[in-house]
Amino acid sequence: MCIVCKERFEQRSLFRFKIISGKIEPHFKCGRSFYLCSICILKEDKILQKAFSKMCKNLTMKITQQDLKEIFLDGKS
Image 1 (cartoon, one colour):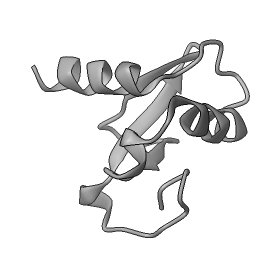
Image 2 (cartoon, rainbow, N blue to C red):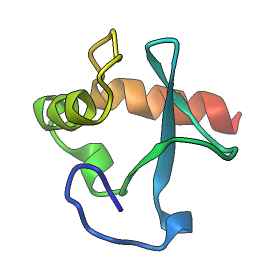
Image 3 (cartoon, rainbow, N blue to C red):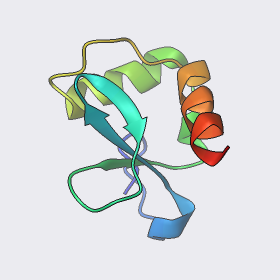
Image 4 (cartoon, rainbow, N blue to C red):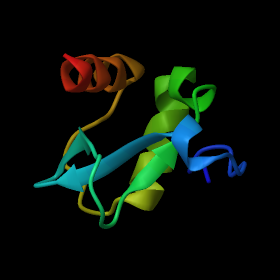
């Protein structure tokens, strides 16, 4: 389920993230994580930040749409 729109999708069609040491990171292993759909990953920074703050109490940085794109580009290199 996407944490922004709360829609249910197949797991392989979602982007998976995890908070590690107060920073958001792509997550490909087992353990606690959360998901974003491809539509919500393109939403306004304010909407994303609200969803992340609800989901991750220990998040120390503001997350923007650009940050998410960079995280996944780095993860796929």
